[in-house]
Length: 186
Image 1 (spheres, helix red, strand yellow):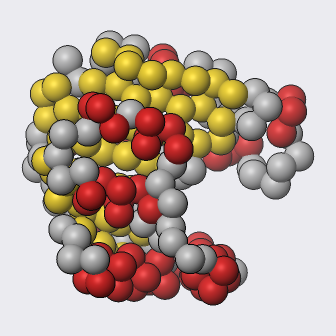
Image 2 (cartoon, rainbow, N blue to C red):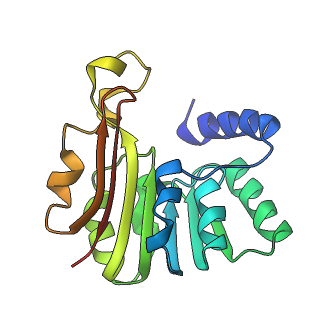
């Protein structure tokens, strides 16, 4: 089964069980920093983060491989009259997306890891813009959770990768097997 089919199947199941797509709880707690502008939500899934950001006065570009997820998000954006522009794209083919340097005030990625995106993120975020990422990390507590080690961060990997940015929030939660960073480009 290819990635698109896998995610379409997962998102179809989620849409059927969903009343509303929720934002990441740690992103939501950072709302004091979220003042609106241009945002990019990569691997947006059903768009909980995109919907939240649109309510925070962001114009959101939302990208996901799943047309089921993108169609759901488009319906939600239209129904709620939100400034969200969802589109289907395989992030492993990022060269199809032509973003200019310093195009975004905020970029978020949750539970998707492709390390080749890090240099792109550093280029497309404005000076003083923000980056939020949360995804799986190596942890003895969660080694058998079904996520390939290829898609797990090493200890402190996000701190090392964005160490020259102003780190406003970082957490490495071993019990949950995740790393979260919120940082500002300097």
